[in-house]
Amino acid sequence: MEQKAPLSLQEMKETLEKTELSALPQVIEAWRADERSGVKKLLESWERKYSRYCEELARLEKMREYERSYPQYTYICGIDEAGRGPLAGPVVAGAVILPPDCEILYLNDSKQLSAKRREELYEEIKEKAIAWSVGIASPALIDDINILQANYVAIRDAVASLSVKPELLLNDAMKIPGIDLPQVSIIKGDAKSVSIAAASIMAKVTRDRIMCQYDELYPEYEFASNKGYGSAAHIAAIKKYGPCPIHRRSFIGNFVL
Image (cartoon, rainbow, N blue to C red; front, side):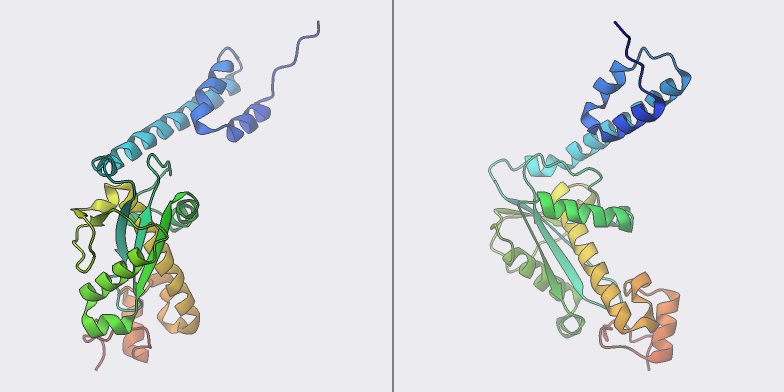
């Protein structure tokens, strides 16, 4: 009987790339006896990748501790916002209810992630969440009632817009007035809770997209790159051109006469 030729290194690589991360050990073990040096290096590389995957699963498991601390609730909602500090643009709040044991690799505080990773996670959260929503408070509202109160408005709008009513809110270091639901305030919650991290990403990506749209209307302020924050170039533009309609007048008093 003719012996089947071993897979080429390229074929092995393609097989590994198509394999679910959780199934890597079985594939690697099946090729363990292959003495080719190129195969050994390939398997070592993928073993390191599997080890990083296991570390990520352990990190996510730790980030589920708060959600699992309240088993009496089915629908636990994470809350976070983006854009409290910028000189221009809205503040955006995110609200996300994830299924129990939902696996979204690399979920983390949005500030710890690259823009590309945030965009990828935004789409995955939309696909896997039980419910998600965002609330937006305009620069005019921020000037009218102050940033803290405007932030509360955005959060209340996000919660009210959810397709499923939450039973418990996990908040990033705040207690939201005007919401008749149990709330848990968690310091640095966007790095400690999967639900809050997901809300952080939904808020951040939504706001960044809004600011990129504003960049097309007001290109002199470079909103696509600074997202409304007080970079040196942004402040120089305010001094040169004056404020535009999305600037927060209550934030830019030091830069305009």
